[in-house]
Image (tube, rainbow, N blue to C red; front, side):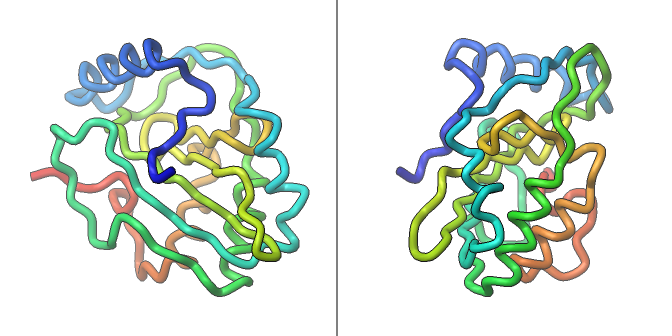
Length: 175
């Protein structure tokens, strides 16, 4: 249950995407082709319930551990303040849909965050937010993205108690 679920990708596609991410690691960005698809209809229940959200668990996963990223905060944090958890849910639901077409995105180093919200003691379907690349967010209906709304990461940092986040806070630093 602790594993990150890849809602929109099949395992073979994830392998290809990992290879592409490795090839892009020396670059500042790569051309991407994306289609605005669904990240699973069941995840849309977060947006229907976001006014009742009272808890959030944030868990980080590293899909490319050979990069050895370092972080200033633990890999798992529980947000127990209902107002903070709700603000993250509302920010996620306010993200714009992932556009279709071809465009450039920053390099993706394989860091993803599983956001598990609860409302009234009931766990909602998980949301996955990619810290790199185009910052895709899966699990709230249509795939969304954070690259056009970086404020999402600041709201998440505040809820997690991370003070003064910088660009590498969620993607990590390598040495």
